[in-house]
Amino acid sequence: MSRRAQLVLLCEDSQHEAFARRFLKRMGWNRHRIRVEKAPGGRGSGEQFVRARFPLELGEHRRRHAAQALVVMLDGDADGVDARVRGLDDACTAKGIPARRPGEPVAAFVPTWNIETWLAYLDGESVDEARKDYPRLRPERECGRHVKVLVAMCRDGKLRPPEPPSLVSACEEYAARLREVGR
Image 1 (spheres, helix red, strand yellow):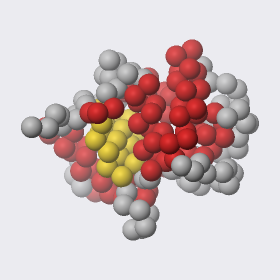
Image 2: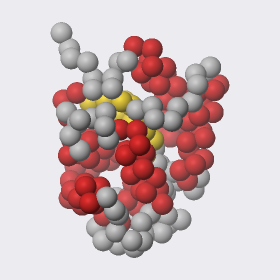
Image 3: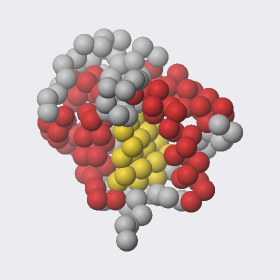
C-alpha cells in the first residue's frame, strides 16, 4: 500500500524538480512523500504542460485532499510572475475550477526569466530578470549549494539586496501558503 503524498510538485523540467525538492526537504517536508508531475522532455512546452495540468491537480487537491499542499513551478520567461499566475487562473476558469484562494496551501513559484536567474543570484551575482542567458547547471543536482543559501536567507527572514522580484514573490508564497502546512 502506498503512502499518501504530503505535497504534489508540478514543474516544467528536471532543474525545477531538483531545486524544489531540495528546498522543500531543507524546509522540513518529507522528500519521500513528494509526488512530482514534470513535463515530459522533448514533447512541447513545459509551461504549457504545467498550465494544462494545474487545474486537474488543483481540482484533485480540493476534492480528495490528495496531499497537504500543491506547489507549481514554471518559468516566467518574458511574461513574469503576475502573467504566469493569471495564466494558471485562466486555465482553471476554462476548466470550471475556481482559482487559488488566499491562504490555500497552493503555491506558485515563478523564476523570471528562468531558474538560472535564481541560481546566479544565489551564487552572489546581481541579476537582471530581463536577461535570459544565465548559465545552466549540469547536472541539475548541483543546485544543492544554491538551495543552502536560499534556506539560510529564508530562516533569517530576508534576501540579500538587490533581490530578484520573482524570488521575493516565491518567498512570500511559501510564507503565506506553505510554511505552517509542512511542519
